[in-house]
Image 1 (spheres, rainbow, N blue to C red):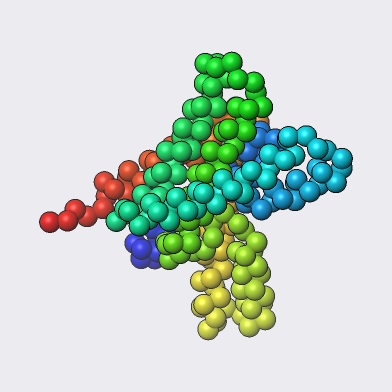
Image 2: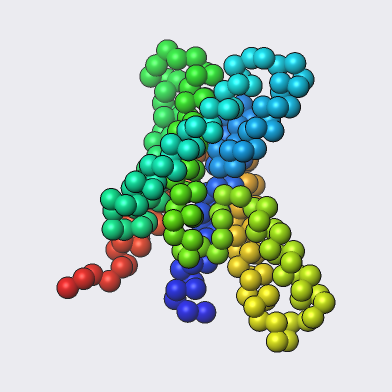
Length: 230
């Protein structure tokens, strides 16, 4: 495996892990709101409304969509302004870190009720996930595929697996390689979901600080290990 392949594997796994973690953490401790796969909130909203719920808790889920759109637009602007493509991920990491810290201290330092604090933390987390989605679209070659939505990755993995079952592995290197890539992405997302659920049950939305710090550390390590110009 070349150094570049190793780097892509690691970036893909990390970002998929972060997305799975944040999506599950906000769903478990953030009033059943998805932060990475925001279109899933349409389903939750429709289910709540169809069951007779007309509370703000149902309607607030629709707010994730414009927040997500704004975040993606901001990601596009940041990509144009910065020569370093990974700067978007640094911004995401800082946002998630701030979310986790705020989730711990806002209830203590302010008189805000629990629900407004919860929704604020979730919406800012959606902002971070929007930046990650923008990164995935703008710099598609930096990962093995989408890191925030797994349906397409699972579909590709199923096609590759079916191809290998029918034709075997000899001479079918493309499907073998593709299946390995999808395994990295799906495995990272699943691991993130499991850990995010456990951490959110344990410390609530303060758990968001973990993926934030992880992204910042990885970014700084990458900067230190990058070859210096001149």
